[in-house]
Length: 108
Image (cartoon, rainbow, N blue to C red; front, side, top):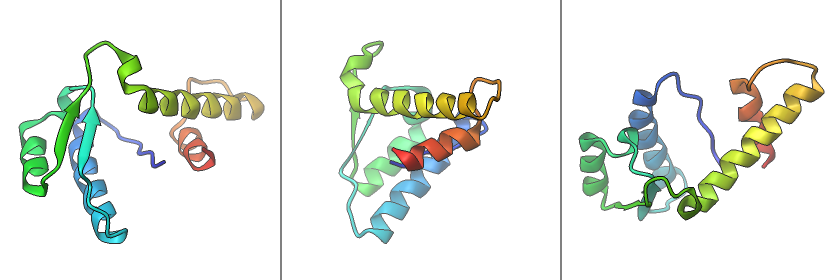
């Protein structure tokens, strides 16, 4: 599992493109589809054009039905829970730091 800390949702488009290209070049693996919930940052026209150029199929889940995107929702829940546990164990207050959630991605 790979996690990214973004300053704004608008940064996700460039991050997605870089990640897909890295996977395809470093691991010699062809990304065949991308599944998302249809949010604007995942369905931008330039990102759709990138998917078409790369031959990547988009699979959009049903809106407001988190159970249809179960794997991603479970992964997010696990990362957040581990991050909060790390904060609690360190006696820190807060809703979650980038570093803690990044560390929890490594531990999953």
